[in-house]
Length: 200
Image (cartoon, rainbow, N blue to C red; front, side, top):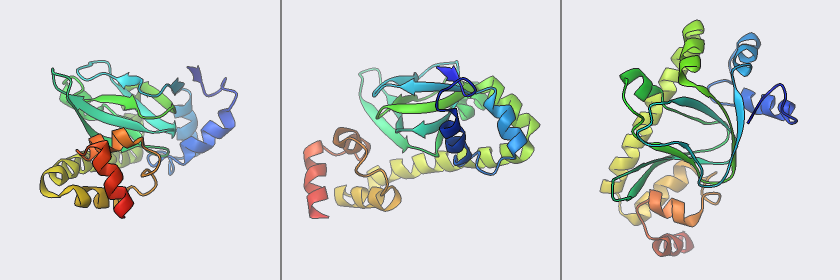
């Protein structure tokens, strides 16, 4: 990991941060202030960034690659709640506010590069920038709504309907997510997913 200022690709990273859905409308002075707090981390495929049940919390801005939010039971059965790629983010903010352990893991689906900072530092930054805080909290609520909608979809839609909904909402990710991961997200076997994709 390294700071942005010392990173050999710092100009590219700064451009990617300016395209992030939370940061894109941020004043230059605020972005420079935030930049000093961020660490750039290269993440291997399947590497955990946050472990379910953790109390140390962080904020992530995705620069390259795809992350997933996933929950598991004591028997090891997993449910993928969402995917997030470039220009998106993931966070432990709700757990921080509720003073509870993080109820999910965040892991890399592909090789990824993220900018991260600790949740206490992110909260302090938000408290100094009310407009950014409002935009961020709206996005956190939207993500929670998205996860709820996905859970409902698993119960109410048949297999073709689940794939059609994902294709409609996430066309850009359809061919980038490994088949096994996408099948798990849609509660399908990889073989069923392959068959359905051939029919579309």
